Amino acid sequence: MPESRRSSRLRATDWVDAALVLLTAEDGGEHGVTISRLCRTLGVTKGSFYWHFRDLDALWEAMAVRWQEENRRRITDVDELSEMPPDGRLIALSTMLIGKDHLTAERAIRSRARSNANIADTVRNIDTEIFQAVEAILGEFAMGPGQARLLSGVLVYAGIGYIHGHEGLPTISPDDIQRAIPGLLSLTVAQPFADPEPPASDSP
Image (tube, rainbow, N blue to C red; front, side, top):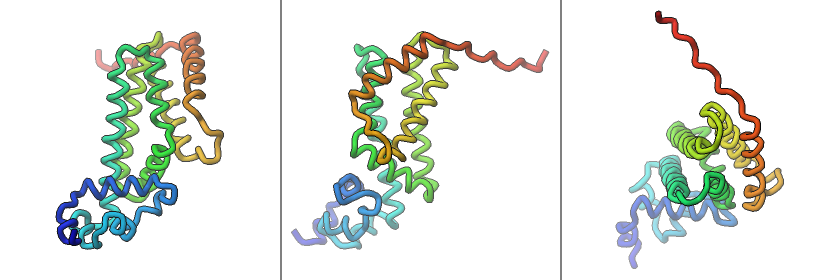
């Protein structure tokens, strides 16, 4: 097929798909996603790329939005497991977030967020949605809302830390999560703390 016809049939989503494949390839990573390499992969010229994106940063912004959609799908998949007890759903969600490809993409997108405000906004939205999903699950346990919120923060912060530092830390397997989360929850439920009293109102 002539390059011009192939190029005209490409959509912005095709470029995002190809970029995410390159990102998670063995020889990929953040620096493996280049316009030249994408053009070779898709068999088109750079003109096709610039038809859809103003520059590489714009592509990364679209990749971050796609990643947010993927995370939402994972959360929805877990929410639909209504027959599963809450600790099982928390384990399922955590297991989804430690896969090798997931960690590679997540770390790269967070790295780009340091220099791109639009990507940073998307990452904040991703973190908020995951936090809310974890908090909703923990709310089903015998703990107050303040304790559920605090534990949600601890788990989400630990996950973000693992994204950035997992290559220098012991590898966490799904079996590790399956053992660790019930133990953590049992300790938390066995030693609850009182939620703080709301601040007193100054109005009479």
